[in-house]
Length: 67
Image 1 (cartoon, rainbow, N blue to C red):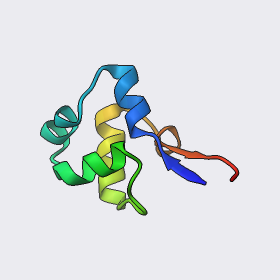
Image 2: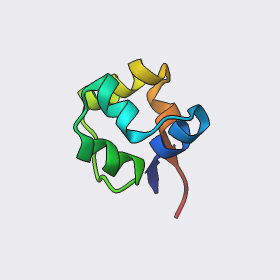
Image 3: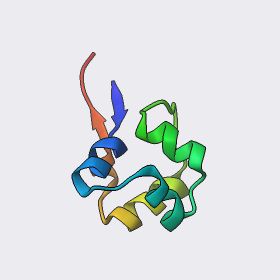
Image 4: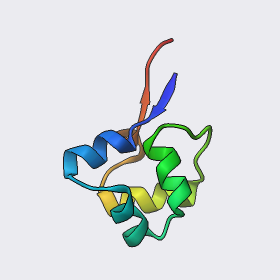
């Protein structure tokens, strides 16, 4: 199973969804879905914006666990 761990990174850094929205310009609903791990995909421009803002690599946001 692939999991998007934005919620974990946000919690570690004391960030809220509104912080991500304001700084990156990513749509509020997209940030909410990513933080709740409710998305089935992510666009590269969105992933790029998150990586730049959070100063992480894609692998820091995407986790794989066996089902």
